[in-house]
Image 1 (spheres, rainbow, N blue to C red):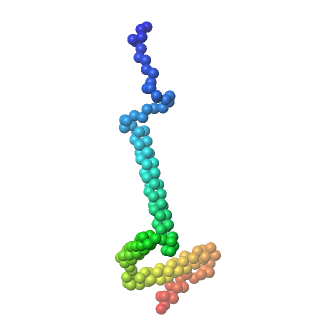
Image 2 (cartoon, rainbow, N blue to C red):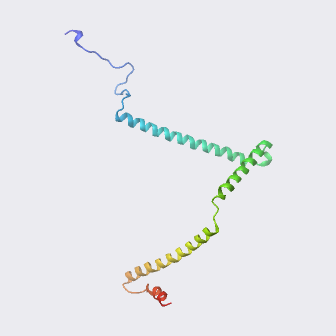
Image 3 (cartoon, rainbow, N blue to C red):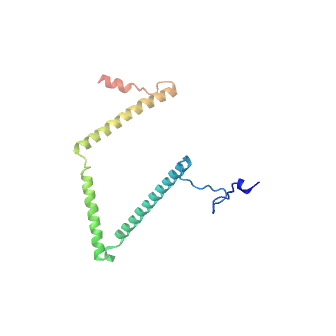
Length: 151
């Protein structure tokens, strides 16, 4: 046997045993790992965003919790301006959602009608349930209907 008849291959330099080299092919396993990586990256980004919002809230809280006597003129002016802008925003945004008088009247009528109907349904269902358990007419659930028909 001559040495020209053999193909000798000792692997890739630096390659570890049992570790596969990541290929750039579009096989299913690669696509799934890329998708998983993107989900993890999105979660990480969302977590960082949440942390930035918390930090911003802390800074704003520090600005408002400082007593006015301990603030410099610039800090006081900045705090007042911020509070005025928040108040204006609240007034402007709630202005569009102001309830009309008619809407309030309809809401009151619906609540009273709904509660009255609810009581009637409970009376009918509860009475029939009690009568079924007792196997006798303890509660006459048809009384109210007869009274309404007579009047």
